[in-house]
Length: 361
Figure 1 (cartoon, rainbow, N blue to C red):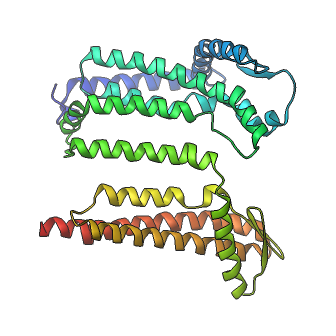
Figure 2 (figure 1 turned 90 degrees about the vertical axis):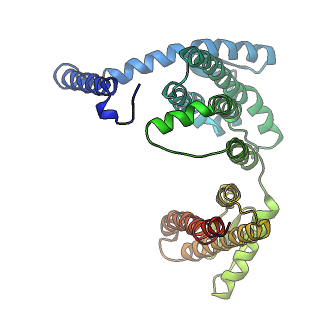
Figure 3 (figure 1 turned 120 degrees about the vertical axis):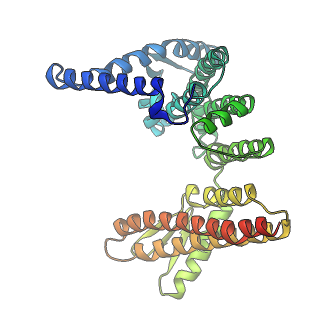
């Protein structure tokens, strides 16, 4: 099938025409006959029916674990109201939203069926996806209903995301598909005139780095509190802020001033942005390892300093009039600034080191 010019391809044009007709029919029916959207409630009913099997499996596990919880009509029901249940109420009320892994599901299915591969292979992987998805949903229910309460009794700040196991299962399936279909994927991209030259080694490195990114986000940051590092950042922020006449004292993960406080969440420690930058540099590293490591460490130092400046600025802003509101607003601005800094560092690295190294090589 020739897809070099999509609009000259009969199959492509036919697909567009069918999509346009269906969209028009839906629009007419929606405006003229139905008082509300009929499509979304239909899909909502379908996926709720789909959940009955994983719910039945989860209930069996709950029974074996003597967890004192069941799922009935898509609702978690505990034997008695607990502190844990109240603390995680948002997850229990919206557990389908968290556990269905819609983004991962869409990514995997589009990649599988959008790649030029044998139909038998696509069907096999779709079946594997279905099994993986069921395990993902059941594991999330188990983390919420059984593991969560146990961890909460040990230490309330410990919280394993219910999507933890599901995320890694979905990622593993996606990695297997990419690995066994890499030539077909590259062939598909070339047919739509996206020419990407990438080695097997580079694909494996990308998959490994992405795995560590998921591990960092979904387990390390979610599970550990980093109290010593938090105290270290707050202490530096306190000392530098005092130079400008803004004094405070540290209480747990907060730096409390005269008129406002800085609460330092473990999600604001800069680990994700540092990892992102280091991964980008590593994937485009030079043969000269010394230059690569010097630039990487220098960039990490710059990101650390920018994050520290952000903390100092937020604490100072919080001491002014309407400090809480202004600090929240500045917090978002400073987040954007840090990602702009990462982009600039990446451009400098690629333009002045990578391209120069290729020309000289």
